[in-house]
Image 1 (spheres, rainbow, N blue to C red):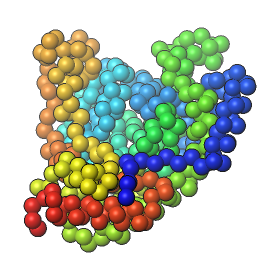
Image 2: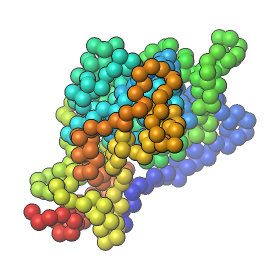
Image 3: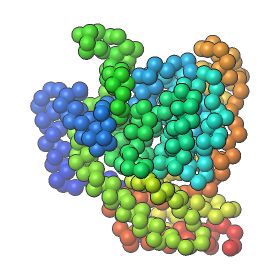
Length: 402
């Protein structure tokens, strides 16, 4: 049996819908910023429940636009070291400094106790990343910390489309949220992103920043420092098709996760990451922990070579603070001088000379978890094969005797 990392099925009726709409786009001559972009944004806004939605070319720039729309510049912004580097890049590209914080091994998300310690006098915001499609039960404490310190709470929802806590959707938990439509995501347009917010000022600023800074109130004269962060009409068409079946996609992912839960219950070797009872997940990743002493790279190799099962990428195998980029760049994006730390002229006390370290929880979880293949259409038979193959690998090939 062959179980790939990902399948993205487009049935014939969906292809016909997409082809028809693309032909309409081509016939219209409006290839960007047209009616299909607006329709996609409206469908997304309704699904999340936000007042506004702004489409972008990807999630990284969606985060950058949010930060810039809030007027944050020359400040520090706290993000978890357990995230994709795009979160850090968004902070740096917006003219701010990254401060990393540790993550809780039980939630893979920001660790509130460490978050408190990382706040500096110039800290302006915290980015909460919903890793693997799970909203941390510490959300309320993190929100309280932000309120106590007058910090904006921004959501990185790249993994969290359709996820919620106590009935409130990701994308509504802070001042604004950023979503991704990369091929691996719950809904995909190939590339693309979306901003959700209830803040009118953030919305208006974001609309200008994504379109070269053009201000409609000034006859599209440039009043913001903007850039081309737009989404094409053809991409929006695919987004519309995906939103038409978004609830179906989410339900299918939950069903596959439920199968894995049943198959792994009480196995004694592989421990799935538990989903808090007050949250709902669409399972961007199905995360599980390996036994102590188990070699993950060996597990993945045996699963692929012997059983034909491709385990997906981790979230994440390498914490951001360990990436080699920091040998060449400071945490505010300034190129170092031949690898040597330099003083930063952007603002006083930037701290670029000091490499950030000391994240034991994130280091632990990055070394001990795996992610099982999960996507709509994965059958119970295939899930059983994945689990049987994994348990056989762990028990007999890639770990000490139990």
